[in-house]
Image (cartoon, rainbow, N blue to C red; front, side):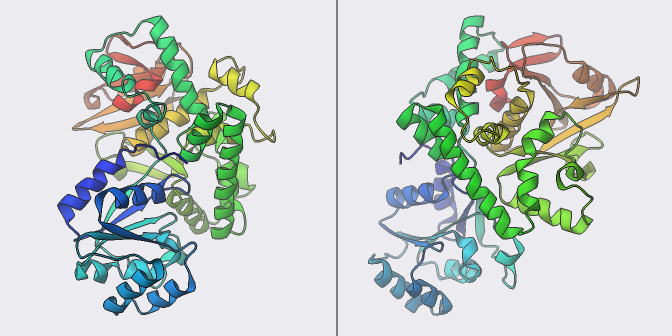
Length: 445
């Protein structure tokens, strides 16, 4: 499989230079997002030698060595024999892959780091699940990075395009329209990203086959893997149900995710919170919580019982939305690509905006309140904290540039607002003090 250029690599270089072995690097992320690949690539390029201990498939000798990890001289000697690799002091790195499967090794990081002979990289998912942390002390000597699916710029890199995103950034900064013809092409390019998604195996399949049905098959394999994981952490199947219902929940345009319509009854509050924590810890989903008082410091005023749930990868989201077919065929994909499918695709655009904002380092919050008539709600899809102000965002899948919710929000909270944005499917332009932004520019907000 191809190895794709990832932005996290520069952060890993920064960790190596600045920490100089004083912390281990923990790379967390959803399954199949490329954690092991980037760790091995980094080890190959930046160290004289390395050992990968894959706890998902480690030989018996490794588990025996871990039992005596306190004897570090013996532990390092055994690893070198088992893997046939010589380790060099301060020039080698040991990768603990799928570290969640060996809590004892994670707990020992504190002492391995203090030993300071080698560097350590841990990769893992489901790192906070109770059974993976029970009876161990989580080390504070970890520098933690999250690896997300490839963002849109990384996707363009994978397609051999290094110029589009820098040019878009220039256009966004100058607030200049791109022109209808250019914008149509860029929106079509972006819809390809929405359909393929950012999972490395899906992108590799697209580059290999140029066939979106083949890509869909690969994405289904990944979703099945996620469902297997959910059943392992929650044998009742409720976590898997909550995950699978994300597209249908978003398509309802409700002001919150409604668990009862998915699970059929109200769950015990404590059990429900644990289910949601486990889903969040899997990093397969992104949560947006309701900001009761939208202002700087939104976590202080968030209602964590009122939330929306998005899928971490929009390519997987599209596949899950059409799960009623055994394989989503190329006809549907081509219609989606050309924006000619009759289904209202607003929820897909909302999901991709959530994904882009999350991968750019934002926590997600939204706000709803009744209209003047009281019959409907206004809704701001996302609110970003920027300095001492907040930036509200309304998302549309169409080219319509009406923004009633934004206007009402600005009237209500005028003293708190820095910039306001409508993200939609047309060219960059201003409408009084609201900036209308094509979806592919979301990363610059």
